Length: 253
Image (cartoon, rainbow, N blue to C red; front, side):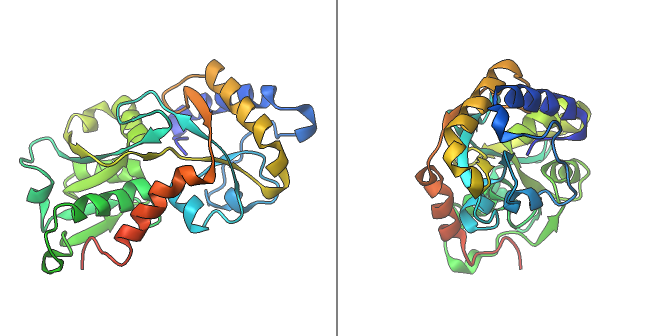
């Protein structure tokens, strides 16, 4: 999920280490699939390993995908199998979240936990009653966390919620734009983006998780996990609870 063009070599190295640790009879592909529709592999009956956002996993958008593990990332706002979103604005913008009422929000897509639901949840904490909602005047849908951060830096939006790992990548790869921005606050911690497999491999989850853990030990990089921990479906209940809380709410008219 953090496979930006500049770091695809790092992602490939992580996959090579994971693949080397997988049992040979799993016949894992040598190279990663990078389709235009990133959600298509989640529902592919031949999926050996993939990663999805937590919201598609709990909402059914990932189909019958089976949970394998959840990752630890060594960046601010992430760790212990969880992550947060950075609420960002331009560096010269004063105030806190409540001061952005009536502004323009950038989101990657409505189906995103870190880019949409986390922002809506944060806004609900500062909206005192229904008469104050929606909070923003307009929403710009950018299609990606990186594009949302770029939109805020360019003045095309006032605020965005950026996944902690994406925010760290943005700092590394676009330092000039990153310096034009600041973090207003961090959202609630949520379970990190799950690794998944197709139902046909449900009985191999332990082996898949072990291979991911071995790969994390060998191929540490900013876009890759530094550790992988076992996961069960109930670990993702906080995302379900947040989705229920924000259901029917809107960021803008």
